[in-house]
Amino acid sequence: MQKLDRITFNPQVMGGKPCIRGMRVTVGMIVGLVASGCSNAEILDAYPYLEEEDIRQSLSYAAWRVQEIEVPLDIYENTD
Image 1 (tube, rainbow, N blue to C red):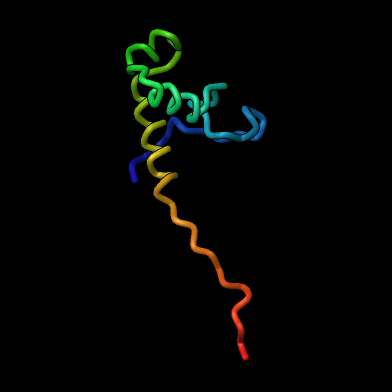
Image 2: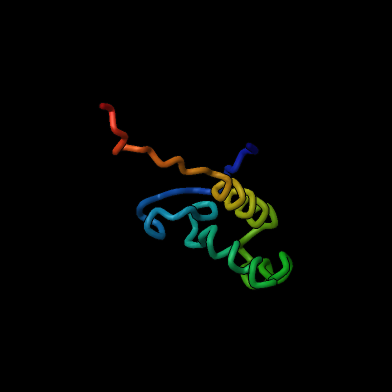
C-alpha cells in the first residue's frame, strides 16, 4: 500500500476519525463530496486549504478500508 502521510488520527480531533493533515476535515467528508459528484476542482475551490493530494489520499484510504475482510470466528464450535 502506498504511503498515506496526510491521513491523521487524533482522539481530540473529530473524535478520532481519519482526518486530513490534522484538520477538522474528515476522509468521510471528502469521499462523500466525490460520491455526490463534486469534481476535485470544486472541492478545492470550496475548501482552499485542501490540496489535490489530500483528495487522492482520502480516496486511497477509503478504498483500502473497504477491502478489509472480517472473518467470523466460530466460538460455539462443538469440541466433543
